[in-house]
Image 1 (cartoon, rainbow, N blue to C red):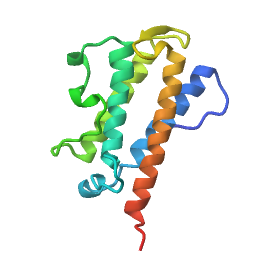
Image 2 (image 1 turned 90 degrees about the vertical axis):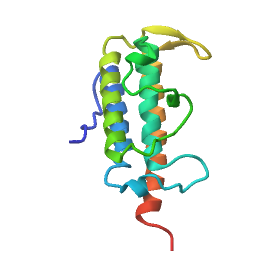
Image 3 (image 1 turned 180 degrees about the horizontal axis):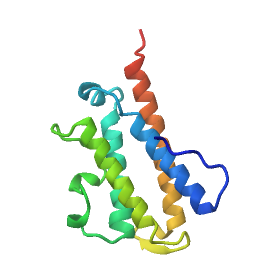
Image 4 (image 1 turned 90 degrees about the horizontal axis):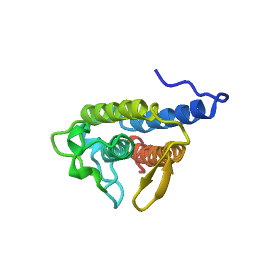
Length: 162
């Protein structure tokens, strides 16, 4: 069931609601596709419907599990060297596997984020001082952008130009 859109509430409630709705919108761009269509390269980059969702799962792990929770790679669910700067999906990963991975990573991100106040900060090499508020906003931006990418890819698959 889709997350209901909040238009009023605390700052935290609105940020988390918007992030969850963007997470869902991104996963929705992959749902129902065949394995072949999920991997179709329709643009010059490595962006395919499945790789965009795989990338988003990596972003969840990098920002929440690695950065905020300070977990070692071995403690992260699904973390691999592929998480750094790649949209790689292995041949044995199915659409269902990647959606489940993304949903698990998102749930773990929610749990980790709940342990911090919006104004809590940590130092991030190359970024400087980063607050939880900034992280939630960055993830909203990231997943909204990728959901848009996914929408366009899905449109090309569902309604190819003649």
